[in-house]
Structures are given as C-alpha cells and as structure tokens.
Amino acid sequence: MLFSEKHSQAPVLVPRQSSEVFKFYPRVINNSTTSFSPEEMQLLEKGVKHSLKPLHKTKTINSLIIDLETKISLNDTLVNDCATFLKELQVDSIDPGTHKIV
Image (tube, rainbow, N blue to C red; front, side):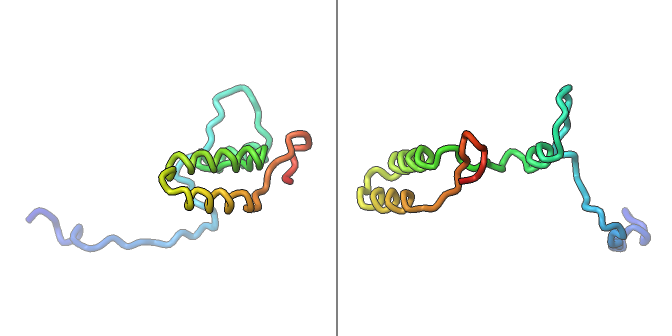
C-alpha cells in the first residue's frame, strides 16, 4: 500500500479569519535610494499592464488610425468606418502644462 488511510482523505480547507488581503509577493521592491510618495507607490503597484491617459488626444487617435490602417489596408470601407469612429470617440487626455485630465 502506497498511502496510509490517514493520507488518502481529502484535505480540509479552513477559511481565513483575517480581513487582510493576501499578497502573493510584493508588487514593488524599491532597491534605489529614491523615496516614493504613497500616490507614486499606488501607481507603481498597478503593474506593467496599467497605462496612463495619453498626453495628446489627437496624436494618439491618429496613431491608432495609422496602426489600424496597416493591419486592414485591403478594405478601404472598413478603414474609413474605423477612422470615423475613432475621431468621434471621447477620450480623456492629460494637459501637459497642468497635468490635469482634460
């Protein structure tokens, strides 16, 4: 017999008593001498898949249109429909002078 009867039973899961959120690993480890504010740490902890709002709405949308056009350039109607949709899309952007959302 490979397993004793004691080991053949399914494990019993015990619910956590703490209201603390489990962290598998720390998201940010600061090995530099630079101190970050709580707001900066909160932004860094969002991870690499988080993106900031674009600085220039028009440049960003034009860049999207160009990228889209290179992918689907064989279908002019689809390109024009997508370009029109993107130009009319309401996208928040950041004012480079005030750093506020516009």
